[in-house]
Image (cartoon, rainbow, N blue to C red; front, side, top):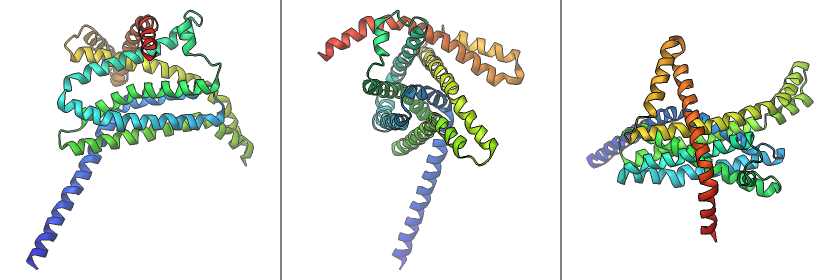
Length: 317
């Protein structure tokens, strides 16, 4: 009997530890998600542009494919990779993030370049070719998943840094929770945004009251403009997130010639508007990071199109 009581005591103790671990994981996941919130917003702003111009019937399948690719990025590639790197080679993480940030700068600058000089580069034109819708969809999905990989890497790295040091299994579960929840929230929001015009059309056709039908018509009219705005925000997000990653990476590696002036300018602007110091700090930092990201991206366009792309084409042969 005493043995049974001792066993029950052990089970109760294990249950308490498990419950505490669940609480720890939930708390760590909430903290990590909050730390990564800025990149999550950028991710949500970037994604809708990848379904712009497609038939309505293809919008949700495309978002679903991108969301599945995002989940694979986070859970299959990034989670074990970041845990391994943080344990065996933590010094590699910053340069890898900087490489990803440079890619975001390139992609954002490429969109700006195409907008300003739509016929100035055959390589840029070929990259944005819309002659074959099926091919375009594959290219868009592949491009979205590549861009998501960079943003997901930033999200997962920020999340990992926000998790208190502990058992490896707890860090892994917390990262998995954060990655899954962020993916659901981001792509659920994106799906709602891109289908809002269809919702508005349904409201306009079936609404029982005139105000309800008017709201539906307003949604239908407003959504194309909103999609254009989101596409612009998405491009800007690539530039400021990419620029911030590179600038912060240089700071981490010991070169402060870019990070410090941006930081000091943001602080000076915040002191000038103390009532909105947090917002001003973010806005100035994002703007200066974006200017740097655009400059870096424009410099990378000839490198990518004249050197890297031909080299990859030769390698594929």
